[in-house]
Image (cartoon, rainbow, N blue to C red; front, side, top):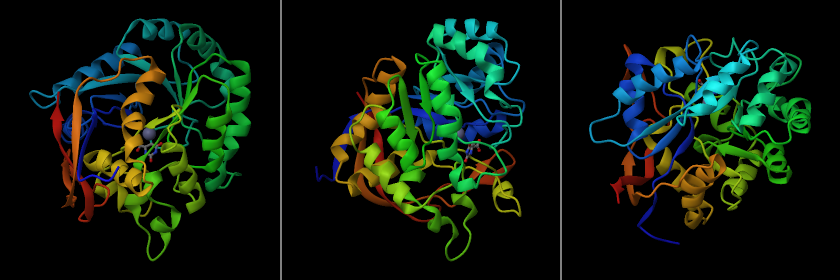
Length: 349
Ligand code: DOR
Ligand code: ZN
């Protein structure tokens, strides 16, 4: 496919951070412009640890959808050592409550209340397996002994594989995979398992972040790896394998929290995410596989209907904004002030 214009079924974002309150005025329109649905992460302060809190958060998101927009937030519960099993029963009853998110305690932004030892949540996981409620994994060990570049691969051996042996029917998404090992594991493991892949891990490797000056706006977790891993992710995303699907992990932080001595992890990709995926798929000569990755595989994995409307992309250079207003601060998006090759040209039926 070598075109200057094409349309695909409207995509969904299966991993998204919108933040809360005033920040929603920026984050929600950026995602709603082209994504139809999004799985919204629960790592707020305080985290979303009950179905009631998820419902209230969802309402605040809905209020921020621009008039006439059709965007459906699918909510998640934040797994803690103390999440009651009864909360899983409540979650399973709500069609808008899509999954439970596991953060290893302390591994990333607002993960302090995460799980300290996987055994502590076995009863909850057993109930999730019964109820067929998916578990979304931040797949890194948080262990000072383990080098930050190895934390995903070690997670697969130490946590994921034993977890799957114990709960073989539990539906699992290994989120934002960053390594050849993760892509291989997800390809070969018995069902039910899937993985999301971000645009930034397909586009960049660690030297892009660290060579010739440190670029805090490319700092995220799991951290960008060597180029061989980016190549493996590109192969997985463009393979047509239905286990791999789009999840941006778009994660806005105020610029003052990024450009500082100890900056937060997270890359704000929502304003150009679909265009950046298109760039990658074109480079891999796989534009004809973008639709399935972006709009079919995730919906099929979650057992949801595929979207019926469409979006159009045109080959047209545009320059990404330098900044957006963000609560009482600003946020710097990916590619700020730089060229992007594809342009979103609207939704249609
Ligand atoms: O880069 C990241 N940002 N990785 C995460 O796991 C969390 C996210 C955030 O919430 O900022
Ligand atoms: Zn995330």
